[in-house]
Length: 355
Image (cartoon, rainbow, N blue to C red):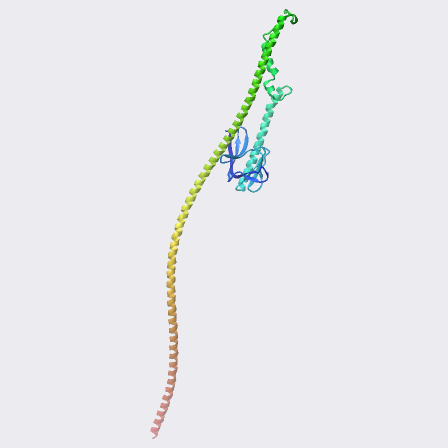
């Protein structure tokens, strides 16, 4: 399966200043995706973050790492392999707490994986030690792997000497036989020639081994580079998926905003109608106010006329009262005159009777 992202979040990435070891240097202009990756083949957890095509975080989680919260929205950890300190600034305390929980969880998983790996190594090394039978183990060297010059030569010598049988009891002694001496001298020369050939072959094989080691190291470096590139591409792919998801969310948000905008436009049209109605009501109110003012003016005029009429009525009533008083006075005077005339008539009647 290779490495797969198992948790992702977004944060601003910082690194400690390598010169001062105090100030933070931002490695991303804006918030980027920071992901936990798990490599099932090597049983390794890593924190990876890309800014475009550049890997700004590539940190392997080890059991001795510690993630520290320095504020409500900022956390940091030291990576001894990269010889730096990473810092992450989150948008909320919840995101920081979640990242810290995952860090602790994967750190514990890395510790357990390391312990299991050590147990497996101990189990595999125990049978080999038992089979050694107490022999002293020597460090691995090119000579111990490929064999020494003598060891490489001796099998060849033995092989070449096997067809040669030892002298029998019926043969002549070595000191007394020049034929046997010449034979062994020729055999020795042959062995020296074979030894020289084997030495040359050994040197050539040693040079080939060195060349193969260099090629193997180059292949390992190329494999590591390709592995990192695959990891970066996988991270880019995960970020592309995150961007696609973010784009889908943005499209949904845009659709929601468009529907909200339509509702707001409908509300605005309703408010415009209400404003038109309010303007009509305002015009009617102004007309009624003007009519009311006119009525008030007419009312004031009528009140003035009424007051004038009341004054005239009061004056007329006063004049009528004075006329009544005068009339009463005249009636009283007339009654007095009538009484006097009646007495005069009675006196005249008496005088006439008397005469």
